[in-house]
Length: 572
View (cartoon, rainbow, N blue to C red):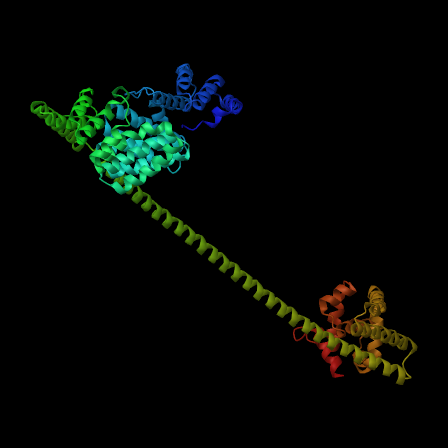
């Protein structure tokens, strides 16, 4: 039994699907009514092909809005005509689908278009182009989802293979189609395909495989007895090829009257009766058949008729039948071998092979291009990483160098600090001894020395402990003294008077005034000429400097006054 369409079983579901599709059509700019009819015709195609055809005929093709819609209508109309056994030999209906689906549409739409295009060529008798269409349609098989369309295409192609004596390919396609029909519940179509495979195996004289397929067919008949008439003629062919005369007679007894037997099956019946020895019955059957022109029935009819007439004594009729047989056979052979039909598959395979080779070359080129691109990217990444690593190493080296320099500078600062601390300690000790042992030191000098000692002790405590609180009084003292220039300079002179009396005496011996001695003491504590000038902020700074040089006998071009004073302090 033919499987029922799921949408047809559930009218509500069909209405919902149609309504949903119609709403999509409205949003896409198509006519809602046309879209509704197309969807409904497609839903009724399998179960009610006559209703589907009626719906499609009611659509005005002029109002079809787009190439896609016209292509869809053309494909559905071709499908409906085929379902209603209306053979057409023109492409008027299908052409919009051929034009559109040649490079657009789904795999199912492309496959169906190839199939119905091939069927039109078959109706024209143009088997070459029909075979090419079917072969092209098979290219979409792996992507297509319409199992029925795939199976129908295989059966149509198998018909042409039978006519070119490619029985092995004929068997293969029918068995393949039978499996597909079985998947979708098309049991009657499945059985017909199995019968075709049986016919092919009988022609190949392959009893083993014929028996195997018969077992599958018999299981179907046991479940669907109403399909037994489909396989009956093939049982006759099996008996004639592999059975005895008695087996043939037993099978013939199960057939009904002559009127219930198709013309093509009557040829088998006539041949079976002839082989069983019932020539009169064979003549009755052969005479009931009108001459046929289609292959292979025409050849079989002429061959069986010639043999029956010969056995019945009609030699002249037998010769005419043999003549018709060989004439038809030569015509068929000429038609086959003068066309490309025998080589259609080979040509297609060559085209596919060339296409595959071209694709392979293109793939190699793309692989090379991609490899070069990947190599370029890899080299770029490696170069970038190299530059990045190099930059990082350079920065690291710079950091190391900076840290080393900072460390050396810090060490130098520490060394200077230690030297300065040592000088401060030495100065502090000297000042203490002066205060403790020298009774001749004036009260003013003693007070200055004590203040200086106290500040130096605080500064030492800060450097030793790291506590800035100890250095605060020193900073305040320095700030106070340095802000009062004269007090600072007097304090410095008094400190040198106590700590380096020979130095002060030397200056006094060269007639330096108190102001000039204060000026020289600034050089003694380490200031340079420019710094001394900025500190005292006197316009006559240079005059004082020149006067000191004159009194001390310093040549202006020989040495710096600061260097001379510090050397003098160390020498006295």
